[in-house]
Length: 83
Image (cartoon, rainbow, N blue to C red; front, side, top):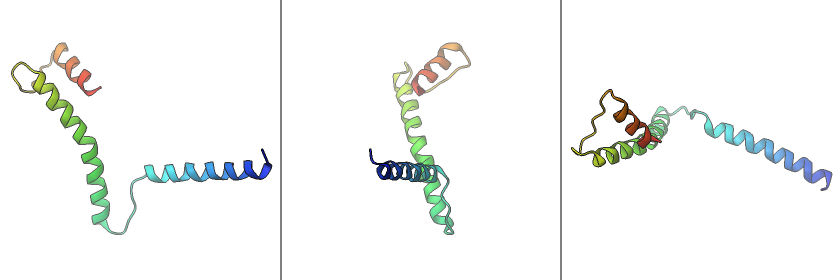
């Protein structure tokens, strides 16, 4: 490969790493409504799959309710569903 191509590829990788790191950071904006909306969307995105898993586990329950006792069986069932 040409040395110029290698240099440009290295620069592109460096820039891509910076973009990925920036994307992983909390948003910084002067408008707190925007920041609140972004944070709320992130919370909902992580909450929705958990809600679905818990509901699915409850649907599989004999009584149709999500009841987790402090026993090994119930805890293993919940952990298995979350995985």
